[in-house]
Length: 238
Image 1 (spheres, rainbow, N blue to C red):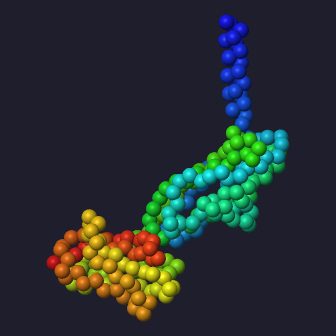
Image 2 (image 1 turned 180 degrees about the horizontal axis):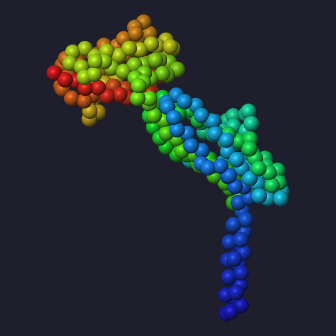
Image 3 (image 1 turned 180 degrees about the vertical axis):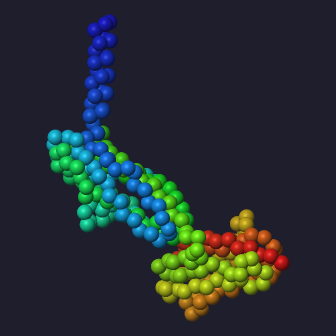
């Protein structure tokens, strides 16, 4: 019985040592943090260390987290950049024995709306799936307090004025891509649709007649080619 228990303890200890030794690469950098104004693009360096006495090759297996539709993320090895949402198999790292690898970067476009979130990049050894490392990232985009404009590749879009409004509310805009399908949706505070406008490239101002609106809070949303770009609030008063 004692021999059997000793064998179990030995196997368990061996398994723990094996598991502990499975991870050969360590991320020396703190988690990648992207914080700034909307429309900013930032680039962060990621430093890795191969603790093994042999070369190692890793591939990006998956990315966990939410990246907004107006945001963009790239994983760069030197000057070659890839989209981790599409190019998983192309993102490969080759590390020499005991190398400190400094040629890995993450580029992040903070997008055009205020938002925040996290993401994780999971790399796996191509020869040993238990040998993994994870790069953690966090992001937060905020609008400048003195900025009332949204800049999109298809349109430059201002804020409603006057705000509060009681008769005619106006929004200035300039369409950069005349082929884009651009609409403005107006909704009540509980989400009921109130009005829908199609923005014309021949015009530079959208007019909303709010004289028949009930007093209260409303939201207007810019939709470009079916995608929600930005939502803002305005008030109707009598």
